Amino acid sequence: MVALFIVLNQTDYLEDILAKFVHLGVGGATILDSQGMASAIVHGGIQSIPLFGSLKSILEGTSPYNKTIFTVISNDELLKATMDELKFMLKRVNKPAAGFMFTVPVGDMVTLGGNKE
Image 1 (cartoon, rainbow, N blue to C red):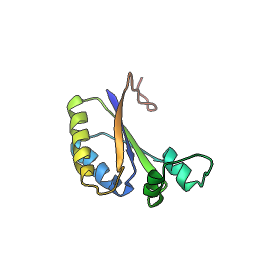
Image 2: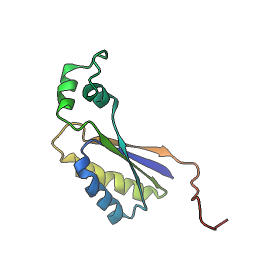
Image 3: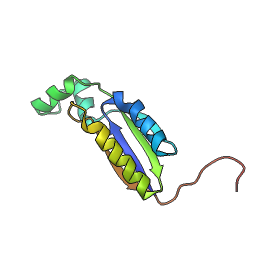
């Protein structure tokens, strides 16, 4: 069982990703508003931290915020299919740094609430 995290800089693709999750059978996901460190430096006007000029020029035209999506997937085949589909979907994005994804092992997952013991 793993947690799949997707940091999505091109937030226009959020609906497409969620639709793909439903289509593939991913049971649910949590979506957080987030901001990367470089974006915080560029868009926050922090002048005391040096940032490479080319990186700064790339980030200046982008949204300062992104979305972080995470879900827990217990099936290795579903995980591979999900990651493959997202890589294919975002490969055609013509902008740099559309986002990235990574997995983290999950030891246990327990549903909270309800009357089950």
